[in-house]
Amino acid sequence: MTPNPSPLPCLDKAPVTYDDEYEQPEGPATIGKTLETLREDRTTVEQNLALLRDWIAKHPHIRRCRTDARFLLRFLRTKKHSFLAASQTLERYLAARTLHPAWFQRLDIRDPELSDLADVGFLYALKDRDADGCLYALCDWGLLDPKRYTVDHSNRMHAMWMEAYGEDALGQCTGAVIIFDMQHVQLAHHSVVSLSVLRQVAHYVNNAVPIRCRALHAVNVPSGALWIVNGLLGFLNEKIRNRCSLSRDYAELAEKIDRNLLPKEHGGKKPKSEHMRAFRERCERYRDRMLALDEMEIDLDHNESYSRHAMLNDIEGGAVGSFRKLELD
Image 1: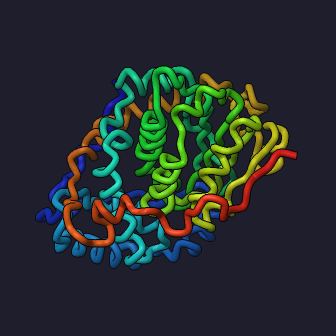
Image 2: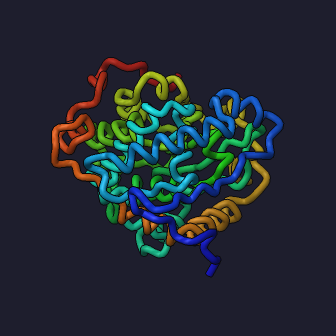
Image 3: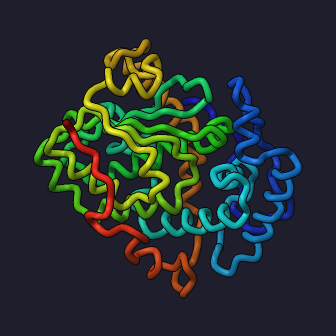
């Protein structure tokens, strides 16, 4: 087995000493501009890590949480080093993990269900990055067998992808792009999707994802699946919604992204099997660290804004029919 990248992180919310080790993002020629956009420098990092750690230590409802620099920088970089926004996202991230254990618990590539979905190519990271260093993932959503799996399995696969690359310093700074290939979506898939489920997913994406969402692309969308795409769009916030696009095929998608990044089967350079193998290896390498996340705890039985009751309320501005629909000509 591939060895773990480093010892398992401490989950004591106020440890005697903190793990300050983290990597500086490097590689792309644009990294300096990216860090400027994030308002990141060493002094800012040190100050905000100290603030966030003090906040966690004094938080009345957080019981166990990672406090290492690699983990906390996910939230600080996602929110451009705004302490308030980063702390709110961390609260909601912990709350979402508690509210939706079927999405976030047991992110284990050896789990028979997740392993099967990885084998069929339901979701995998693309090996290469664009010129800015963004992470890319491709989800062939129609490969989710509606007789065996539900949206919970889809969300769990996405959570595993996000956590497997969560400590990637460059990805923390540059963000990620997800491509949804809807070609294989069939009428039977409608039985596992509802507006209620889409609203829950959007609530998490809007408020609790510790990653910079650079773009969401839907490609090969049959007319019968447009309601799924538009349904999700209706619940996403405006900022993310404006980063969504629909492409008729991969040739049209290639006008928006570097086609070389895609699997060879879709016009890229490397075969799909190579991307899938690299993704599985990554999940195996970070397996123990992802499973350790299950031990983080937050108490939701109170009246704060991220409480169990509040997290289950309707999301802001999510009324059906009030959104810009994507259409096929």
